[in-house]
Length: 330
Ligand code: UDP
Picture 1: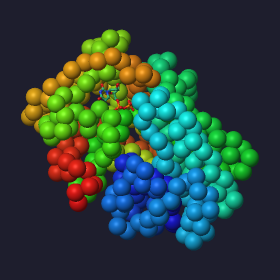
Picture 2 (picture 1 turned 45 degrees about the horizontal axis):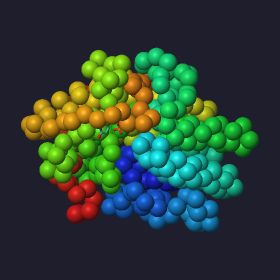
Picture 3 (picture 1 turned 30 degrees about the vertical axis):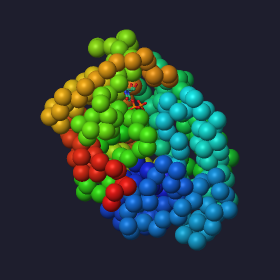
Picture 4 (picture 1 turned 90 degrees about the vertical axis):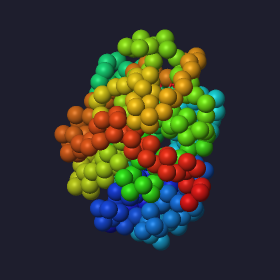
């Protein structure tokens, strides 16, 4: 079975490609390399430097490679940037997905696993969050992802396109082979930013807001290992191939940690003092996001295997300390 992975040179995409290949799938990656790295693409996958907004290039890939299904990661994904440059998010995320779905419908490819986000919920009604809870994004990134989900839902009604939207919480960690891991430039995500301090790349980590209504005043997030996310994508694909109907699933560990708790754990994992300073809240950040993944466990048979924060941070630390320049120096 041949699976197209748009965005397969990015962080979660590249880990999912490794998982697909481990499970015997034939994999094609399309990525515009705006934020991804060709070196992150598994050597057994066929790589095309292509933008999903380029309908002609995508049509050619679908026809040449005889694609059976799609796992879609190609999107802009920084909360902060989405608040200062919202139109980039509408263009890349909504424009890109519109073009991709158009080509899929034209080519008769009817299965797509889609990378959505916990940011689709906004300020949650309750913790842990269920898939049926209110979705009212507080940032533009989450708003575009929710709109992408809705786009797929209408395409199901109109064209019979079957999708699974995976709303993940905070992806972190790295592949156990040591070959791939997280590499963003600029880096904005908490765990890699913290680890830049012991790597000597920054003096301190800045805590965005200490006046939230949480146990220590800093934001609570549910940190989930990227390999566990990758496995969930393959299970979600198999669910669709097995005739499953379109659906939405949360993916998280179900346990929340505050920003200060993450910093403390990173200190103990790295043995480094890691200086921290505090600043204003970051625009668009909900106070708490913690998943109920009961539905993914029940329907997809998914179970996170790396559920301790120490283990997740140790895995990220192993990657960053052995690849301080990400993919650039290899
Ligand atoms: N955060 C922080 N300092 C940083 C980066 C992030 O305090 O340098 C906080 C951020 O406000 C949020 C949490 O860490 O509460 C996780 O942020 P991240 O950007 O990693 O993921 P997000 O939750 O936005 O997807």
